[in-house]
Image 1: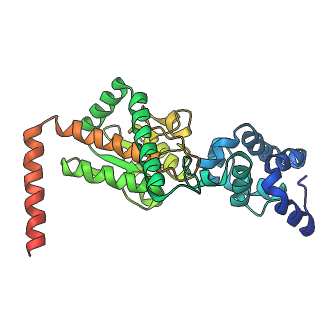
Image 2: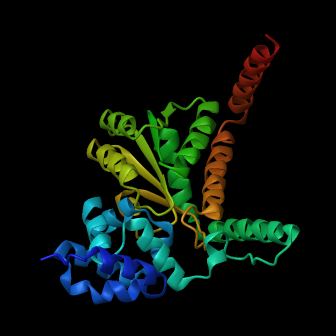
Image 3: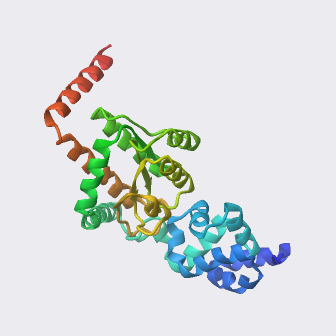
Length: 296
């Protein structure tokens, strides 16, 4: 049976949650349902992971519905997932880490700027160290051999999906990257064994992206994952995984996004060099068409 907090008790618990978030989870643990306990246990074992994950992504990892995660949050005394997430982060990080891990309130403008640049550069170095040459070459082959390619990403990853789409289009590769989650699934359902799907999600647990990947996989399409989590549901579904690295606390990782864009850029340049003459001719045609538009 679920534990029902009174309004006064809930307000008291929320007022103190910044100091006792993880303790509250422990204290209400026995009052949770079995599925809610799965979520609570995961949170207690992985409090640092909550910084990069959404409610839907945690639900996917725990094998439960979004509603179960929300119900667990409310049962232990929070108004919702966001309140729980903020409280847990307040337990484990300093406030400025929620903006950027390396900055301090007393830093001047250029110090902050240099720290941001340094973090981005470090993420790129860490990512290149993690890239497996064989996997990267297999990914290039899969892209070259595919009849069509669907690129899926949501939120900030949708921007990366569009970036990858534009690059592949410049090479004359048949690809798409619809922004709408339903359209992504619809296109995935039309694929076959000659096609390829690229899923982009730093956490690797985006419910919408995983739905697309599983739909495409069910149709026999090949799967490429660009993610920051090698143990994620997305990585587990993929034929080839390209890992990016970020050490950020904030939920919307800046350095992780830059590292994933660098991966896409590296794929583009390598594909361009497969047939340099053809690439240059396509660039000439594209440039000419754009100039005609600008001068019209």
